Length: 244
Image (cartoon, rainbow, N blue to C red; front, side, top):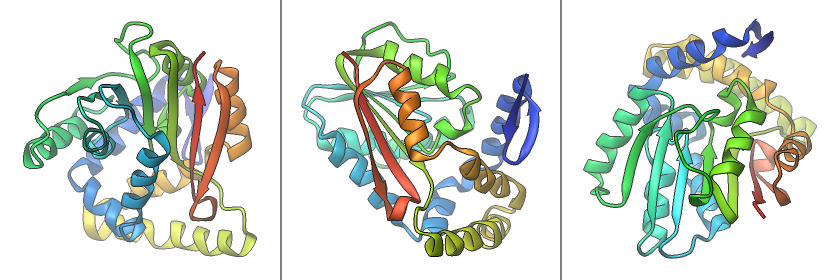
């Protein structure tokens, strides 16, 4: 069976190794590139995710594709007695996240697990919250990852996804496309010495389902009271749903 890797068509079993190669290449410069590409706005998007979550004290979060720990650290700051498991399929990203946790003194109540979002080594009904930020579009089988999210959440638990989406204003869309395809790969070459990985990242955004289509996928996984919130005119969206 075939799937997409950016604009390329590849065999399904080829995608995960290709994505791993991308994040192996960009891991060391990931934080710097996020700031450069978004002019720092990614920090506000992540702050908004935590605000939408409004986590309860003593709650448990599974942060999938947690990379450098940005969501996990915000969650721990927002809760008393909260705990978080950060999962990522890429070991290099987890290593950077662990280093960040030491630098920022987030040592307690945080675990790091190298795992695939499609097959989490986690028991059923364990977590109060499940987050995945700028990662689900890189998963080979998005529906499988959503079903895993449903499985590991407690009844009454909440799924939240922060992901690049589709700009709805035609004028802004043209500006966004120009910036994405002409500037971001050049930033990748200048900062991370890697334009190809960032070309893939730009293309992967365009292949990701639009807001309503992704909402339907979340509902099909079993979640209820599903909704989304556009940020930055739809360049980014927060999708959420509840497990019953």
